[in-house]
Length: 497
View (tube, rainbow, N blue to C red):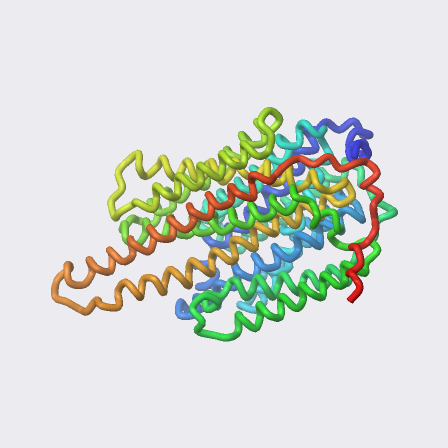
């Protein structure tokens, strides 16, 4: 593992310089995860997409998230083989090409395809950046390094809508994506000062990568559809079945590969498995929070758009702060106490939100939002430190990509559940309401039903956060022996019969 850091030190580059470059890289690509939220109305007007086709237009966002998720594990392992610096640069080039194609998009199909290409480059930067951060510092500083990189990514996501809104008001939505290009090439130039450490003995399992990409794409598309919960269509169930089949193909391929995409020790590691399970549950709770908080403010609380955004900002602004604090205190507390404390804060904050009514006074409004946001940030460093400790250095990229993809899969499932279950719950609560002559006869029952739905959603999210404490108690830092860095055997063969 010491060799993983020697390349950075050979040029005399300080850890601060390396981490600064990585933080800038993940920040700039993370902006585009959420910047399109502000741009979507202007994009729909410019490309003449009617409001009645909002579900279709949502693929400008959904397509990006699916490609972003799929790109992570493939790019992570490829960076282990080809070198992380060069792969980070290649990802930024691909991100720039995608951004340019979005900027000149003449129609809907073009912009969705361009966003997918952009997401492949953007999604690759996160696991590569995390793996590079681990390799750039000594073991006792990994929590701080991962906290910094994670905080930068979260800050980019938080500031994306604000940044996008400012650019749209100033020079138009297309310039959001034109400006990605000089930013990316500036970072490519900075990365050129770092040495690229290639692992000549490592090989990329391209067939396994193809099977995994197919499985992740199909499963994410299935989970992103609300009909998976309502039963209105058989399509998501067919997609899930096909996705499970592709997972089976992937497992068979991995068992036969000399150097599998994800080595067997990752699956047998208690630290790795518990970290991914915790991350998945955090992803479900996070997306419910991100959607339900502003939506409740804008609907049943009847707040203005800027007030709804301010509600959410109280939560999201605390995530990068929590990530920094969590990474800093890891060296004294270990991964379990920090992660459990973060999950407890998330659960407590969301359960307090589950008691919100149409009018919420301070501090019962701000305190739980801050608690939950800080908790969401606090859990990031311990989850990644635990997961990456289970892998030798030549698998850090693959390990980082898997634990990041776990959160994205949880968010996809949570979003589908929120839209499907929430709507069905609302209809069940309002089925008896008929058109009346007074507010009390018509609107009051609808508002009351809406409040109940949001309260239920916050209760579910809070409960899931508390359930995540169970796998978090199994998290630990595993010391991978130096000899395991050369362990390149395939999965153990299946037993006879």
